Image: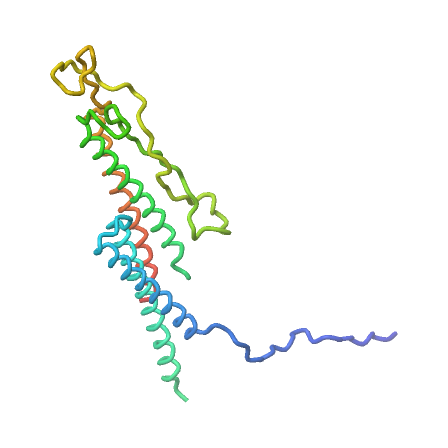
Length: 96
Length: 144
């Protein structure tokens, strides 16, 4: 009576491949948010300008909404920036 | 970007605000012309009414619930077909052969109610938008 040898053809746990691949980091997210904020700010400014010039198609609420949107976008970008800096500081404070 | 959903809510509210603003303009036009006996095209001024329709939001294409989230727009300003109010005033330059003057079919009480409704709907739209803004700000405060 013979014991059949274990035939392990493939490793149970596949090795993790550490290939550095290009992925969106915090920096990309931040620059994207920053460009969005810049666009929103530009829209807000141009709408306020059109309203001030007496454009009849421009309502007060549209101007206020655009400025509120710009406010949120800028705060989003600021929050991302703070998070990125926080994460960087956390890494820099690592004890070796 | 992640705040798109809140911005969609803001844009829907904005469309409602625009519609209510138009409605307010129409109501004040009706009130201002309540005594106008000679409008463009002859005859007394005819009461106007807005027709509101739901419209697709530009940012919602391809979204799962694009058919559920709709903005509103004024698609038509219709004229009230009710007959003009006739008043006996033979000395009036617009009086007909029987001495009656055709006044607009505008009822100031109705217009007041319309204005109050528009004002309340505008307030509701602003409240909805403030809530969306609050939610976005709360979301930004996560982890602070």
